[in-house]
Every structure is written in C-alpha cells, then in structure tokens.
Image 1 (tube, rainbow, N blue to C red):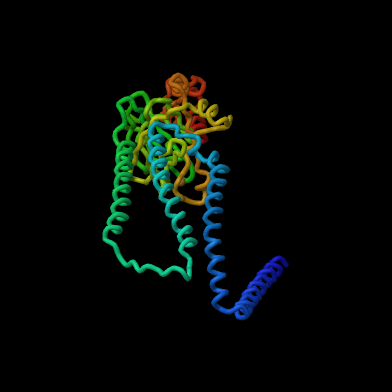
Image 2 (cartoon, rainbow, N blue to C red):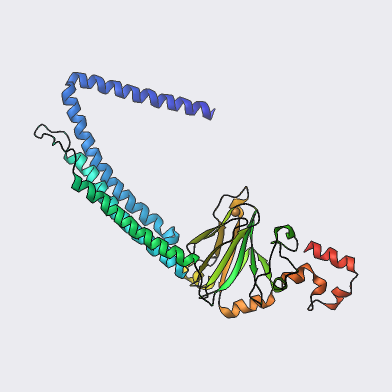
Length: 351
Ligand SMILES: [Cu+2]
C-alpha cells in the first residue's frame, strides 16, 4: 500500500513539474524568447547570491549547534594529541580562509557579471604569471603542512623517553588483549601456535624465563597520568586498528607485523569526567578497521590513573603463568594445592 502511494506521489510530482515547464514555455512564447531569457538570467543571478548568503548562514548555524558535540571542543587528552589538534587547526584555518574567499568570489561574480547589454565580455586566454602564483602558493603551503605532519609522525612512532612504560596490545575478533611485561620489564617470547583462548590468549612461550611474570588483561588497560606509554601493537587474526580518539592517535594492528606508537596521557579518567561534565566518561580504545561482523562491539577502556592507584592495581594482578599453571603459584591457597590433580585441571580450564 505505502509503495503504491509513494509511486503515485512521485508520478504526481512529475506531472506537476512537467505542467509547470510547459506553462512557462507558453508564457515565454507569449512574452517573446529574448525577454523571458533575460528575466531568467536575472533570477538566476539573484539565486546565486541567495545561495551564498544562506550557505554561509547554514555553516554558522551548524557550527554553533554541533561543534560542542565534537571531540575537538573537548581538547586532546595527550601531549601528542595536542600537536595533532594544532595541525588540524592550522589546516582548518588555512582551508577555511581559502574556502570563504573562493566561494564568495564564485557566487558574487556570477551575480555581478551576469549578461548585460552594456558590457562586452573580455577575452582572456592565458597568463603564465597567474598560473605560477596559484600553483606555487598551494604547493608551498602543502609542503609546509606535510613537513609538520611528518615531524609529528616520526615523533609519535619513534623512540619514547626512557621512563616510558610498555604495553603490548593485541587485537582479536572481537576484543583487545593487553600484556604487561611484569617486574623484569621484558616481554616473554610468543608463538602463535601456543594460543589457547582459556589460559594463553596471545601464545606466550612459557619456557622463556622472561614470560613467567608477564601479566595479561582483557578489555581494560591501565596507564599512568604523565608517564609516556609505548604500545606494541599486533593482531591475532585479521587487521584491526587501535583507535584512541581522545588521545588523537590511531595505528593499524597487523598480524605478524608489530607496529608501535607512544603517547603521554595528560588527564586521569577522573579529571576528564570533571572536565567534560560527564560522570560516565571513559577513554575508549576502539577498532578503527572493519574487521568482521562484531567490529562495532570491539571496544576497550583505558583507565588513566595516578601512579599510586596504578601500583595498587598492578599489585593485584597475577602473572598469567600462574593462571595457566596454578599448581606452580607460590601464593595459591594450600587447600587448592591439596586437591587431586584432575580437579585442579578442570578448574583451570574453566577460567
Ligand atoms: Cu577490529
């Protein structure tokens, strides 16, 4: 029923437009071709100016209504992010000025220089000087912008300061796994064939001594305010992408090819809640690469905390080695250890 109604309405609109066109054709015949064309010309000239004015008003109104809802208004939450925002602002200002000038000239000239009996058009074919100017200025501007961008890129992806902490981030369909190197500050080696979803989600090689204090967490990553954090990024299956919009960074997570970037968080999650006036604010790690049917749900949380809170959290974490081999855990309850072997294994498998 609705389909028929829609078709009927479209057909009706088509008939109306057709009739109006026909009517105006008759009017122009009555009035004379020439007079009618001149009148149309004037109307079009006026519409050009109206479009220009309404367009600029529209831009202003949309900006007023929506700017506050963008992350740009909130400000970057990392030292590196501020550099990204700076680049974005410089680009926006330059392109904004060019946009306003060119659009103004385009529509104003269409009105101002519309057909007139008192004017003859000036034939202007070519000017080397003009060509040179409008090629050289954008070329120089873009080169400067690219140099700024490259400098920042090498800064984010280069070596972090000595005091940086390191977290390994592994994407999987559909979630994030974080690995901390533990007390020795060195990650144990890993091999993809060792992956076991229950106890060894990134495939750590347990025989490697460095691996035995490695800590694994899922979905939530803890980092310290003001301390640089280097991410070593990888993937367990397809290409994902670590998207940190509040910190203004993103980096592909490619299986088999580790990528890195580092950043320094500027505000704790708590401070950000006050800053944004949003009691539910959470730093998000999203997947920025279409990676399958659960892509939309591939979200993790980054908790930015003060050093003391981080130390408390870290103290509560159990090395993954003891999760995989509870019988080797010196802190495990003796009751657990006293249980027959078979029960202990079943309990582990369920974790
Ligand atoms: Cu993904």
